[in-house]
Amino acid sequence: MKHYEVEILDAKTKDKLCFLDKVEPNATIGEIKSMFHKTHPQWYPARQSIRLDPKGKSLKDEDVLQQLPVGTTATFYFRDLGAQISWVTVFLTEYAGPLVIYLLFYFRVPFIYAPKYDFTTSKHWVVHLACMCHSFHYVKRLLETLFVHRFSHGTMPLRNIFKNCAYYWGFAAWMAYYINHPLYTPPIYGEQQVTLALVIFLFCQIGNFSIHITLRNLRPPGSKTRKIPYPTKNPFTWIFLLVSCPNYTYELGSWVSFTMMTQCLPVAFFTFVGFVQMTVWAKGKHRSYLKEFRDYPPLRSPILPFVL
Amino acid sequence: MASSEEDGSVEEKENNNKKRSKSAIATAWLTFYNITMTAGWLVLAVAMARFYIQKGNHRGLYKSISRTLKFFQTFALLEVRASFLRIFMVWFVANSIKQIQNEESVVLFLVVWTVTEITRYSFYTFSLLNHLPYFIKWARYNMFIVMYPLGVAGELITIYTALPYVRKSGMFSMRLPNKYNVSFDYYIFLIIVMLSYIPLFPQLYFHMLRQRRKVLHGEVIVEKDD
Image 1 (cartoon, rainbow over the protein chains, first blue to last red):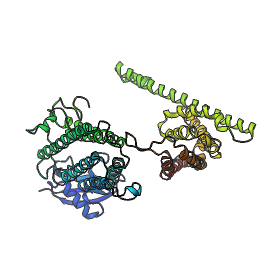
Image 2: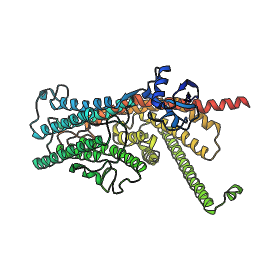
Image 3: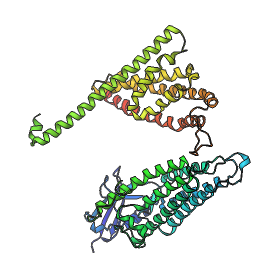
Image 4: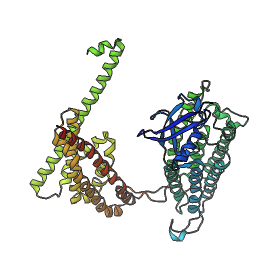
């Protein structure tokens, strides 16, 4: 069996960083990353980007050495992706924040509102309902992160956790401040408005969860395969006929209904910003589906049926 | 012209001509725009100087130039980058809070803006015309060292002086309870604006310093070789 030699150069300076000899032809990039990590302990595999060309795309961990367009002496280029943090850690942190923060405002802990309101409760039942819905939503997200989602990437850059937490925690505080305020004004159309909002909210929560389960079942445990999602026996998944990313559609629906329930402008604003971001993600995902699968159903839109 | 004939198909030549004429239009517009802005800020500078020479002090200076200032600064909305803070200062601070219009700090930032903008627009104009006198380049990359901190001082002092009037009048603010369940305190907003100078100003300043080193440092090396 012919062994390969692998040299790894810095993508920017072209300095020779590492030379590995007697590498098995069926070694994967992942294994090469581990070997590189031994010679440079500060660069753990998750922060290594290995490519064939200094400006090219990163090679995947599963790629096999002998299947790459390289000679028996393979030259790879390395870029440091910076400190990395696992997706699970980021999700858990960014979702735990809003859960706790909202409750601080709901229970009116001291130093938020005037002292005479400390530890009092709102006299409006919609405020209690809103707290239950908001808390339910984030508990659901935490449980999905732990037990449902299967992530394609293990890690993301460390600075993302600060950005993401600032967004989620900041908005949660801003919304919770007004909804739980002693001077809160309940919705104009009263019980009708709140009940309708609650129904839509629950519908969308179940819908969103159904989609997450369907997507999980597309992917065997430990794998990173990608398949086209299709409607199942669960009616909440029939929306796949019209939309590529119905998880975002349902999520938008949840927040629109929460806005209706609380009639609070900061909630509307949060919904809008979330909508913009999810549309960007949905369009990206839709485009990758189209690129990867020749037989992708043509009737589907990224996030809103027929519209967007 | 010979090379485009060698390129062959008529279609390609037409496309090349379209591309050339599009960038020619863009250049023409940019040149016109920059000449106009240079002229506008020169007008402002002259007006301010005349006022001061005639009156001897700065009382009423802001009022006399305010229309021209508003016009040219708003016109510069076409340059999204630098505009936001300027628009804010002109419309939401100076224009809305009459009591601060005679403050020295207002004159300070007006003078700074005027000098900076004249330099900046002449720099762009001459660059577009491919005939950039060295002193303009020198001015653009050296004046800011003094101008930026002075301008920031003028702006911050102005906002700070405006605070009590904002507090008293409750302008641009919305209180609870209301049916949108939101509130906005312009006073606190202004304080946040002032605090945001702390991260933003050093970034901008050091960026300009780095640009300066790149541009002027390169120039020095060439001269040495000559």
